[in-house]
Image (cartoon, rainbow, N blue to C red; front, top):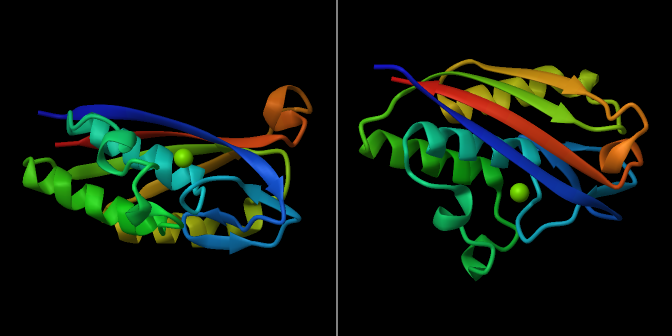
Length: 153
Ligand code: MG
């Protein structure tokens, strides 16, 4: 049987924070404010995988009140979520993702991001980018968001 899970995450952008997507550090004047590394794309993917495995959500497994996850590398959490899914008999088959971000330009980093996620999930991850067209919290540069769908068997 094949199942799918969805994931969504967003973070506020703050001056002077590291800008990290799928573990790839990107040069920018601001970055996601978060207890962890603020990697919205990886967080959305983790939630989609946990959803497909019917294992709840990222906040249940990696609570941001837990000091163990302060500054956590989100790719490590994704690898851990893959192991948790495997223990539940769930194997990822494919993932599709979208990052909603006004700036910086992400296209030059697409291959590095897709490769990092594909290695961590163990199956192909498609990566798409879109902007907020100048409106809403993304369009005003106040934040970044990401969506993901993971299909498993
Ligand atoms: Mg998050």
